[in-house]
Length: 203
Ligand code: B12
Image (cartoon, rainbow, N blue to C red; front, top):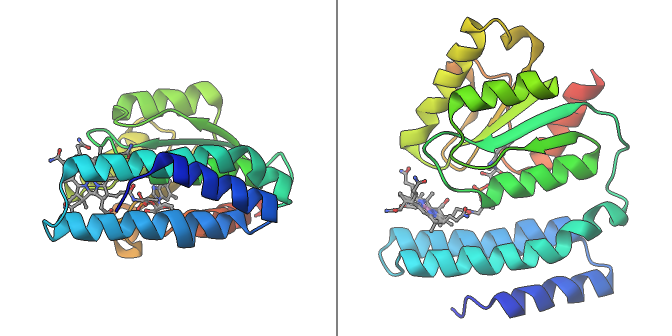
């Protein structure tokens, strides 16, 4: 493994030049590579600095692709509504969330990406301030998934749950978790998010 950010940028630029399917490059290329690093980390064959280097390399490639995604005609048109997105309180993993944010923007949502490790009260404030119709949270750890449940409870308590469609995602998150906590929509990856959220927005 070389964790080569320059090579990732080059691969991204080459794909753009060749008119390749950029979403496929993200999902079947960069994400697959990142998952492999994750598996080796789990097996204790790689360590945290390796994971950080791989994440950095993936981000470098995605940064090159991002401005070109809409140009590829993936855009379903503007005006699908405002979508607040973040990684939930306690969790700093941001790569997947940022990919979903880019893809939803390309699909036509006004995406308000408020970052990672965002306190639950701040998520609610961002929803109110932006008049969002949708809120998506990412959790990459079993220890932080529980904050998605607390967010559902806080939204209900604050009386704004009915005004929002909630979307949960992240590697350990499943449909049954979404059902258990009362989230509206579970999405597995960025394409799934675009498909289901666009459907929800169009009624
Ligand atoms: C990269 C990585 C890191 C990087 C993160 C860099 C960054 N800027 O994001 C660094 C090195 C910083 C890191 C740190 C840590 N990590 Co880490 N990390 C990973 C790793 C290897 C890959 C995650 C990733 O980026 N995948 C690629 C992206 C594209 O995939 P994704 O995030 O799943 O996103 C896709 C879908 O889930 C979905 N999706 C994601 N978010 C959202 C949001 C919405 C709204 C929607 C709709 C969909 C959606 O769509 C995305 C695109 O298809 C995972 C292993 C794994 N298998 O997931 C461990 C992993 C998540 N990390 C783990 C751990 C333990 C940690 C640390 C605690 C380690 C430590 N000891 O310090 C810290 C976290 C500290 C904290 N408070 O958060 C554990 C969690 C274990 C658990 N049971 O919960 C994992 C599973 C590794 C392991 N097996 O031990 N990590």
